Amino acid sequence: MTRPKPNEKLSFDPKVFLTKVVGGRTISNYRVNQIVYEQGNPADSVFYIQKGKVKVAVTSEQGKEAVIGVLSTGDFFGEGCLASQTLRMATVVAMTECVIVRMAKESIIRVIHEEPSFAELFISHLLARNIRVEEDLVDQLFNSSEKRLARTLLLLANFGKEKSGPDPILAKISQETLAGMIGTTRSRVSHFMNKFRQLGLIDYNDHIIEVHRSLLNVVLHEKPEIRS
Image (tube, rainbow, N blue to C red; front, side):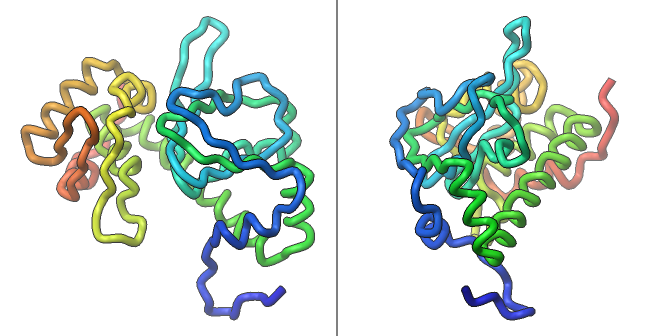
């Protein structure tokens, strides 16, 4: 396989990727609220989202659920199995209609070993996810719930991903889900959503939430503070 030139920027091409994972690969359609896998299930495969959005949630022994992430088109999940994780640590549920590729652990490992350039791309993709997790942790520790909500809305709208403006967010991402993602109550989320709309930072109706670039000002200009 031809390796990229030293100054050539690596890019992830899902079509190329999927042609390399032969055997142990299935493509499935998921309806809204359908479970992809549950916490405690055997971890034996990696998933790739061709279309749609899913939420990742963990449940405590007392039954309390926390949403730890929302993933969308182009994201992987379930990659913990590649690091000897035997059981799923979270539950993944479709938030919209989804098309998801399931790839057996053995198939992914084979491609990583046989295709050095692909391995580099895949590792870069996973490192970007790890950086996001670290940023989420800092956000939880040092930022107010208002700022955390603004940042979450911008991320869900794919803000900054090499295009002119944010994407609309499907309204199926409920205020309860947003509250679980930022660690606050639904009433606080409702209060800030109304505030953002009154300030012209977002618009929403029964179908979508439209995020405007001006919402970034909430993230950049509010002074960080440690929550009590």
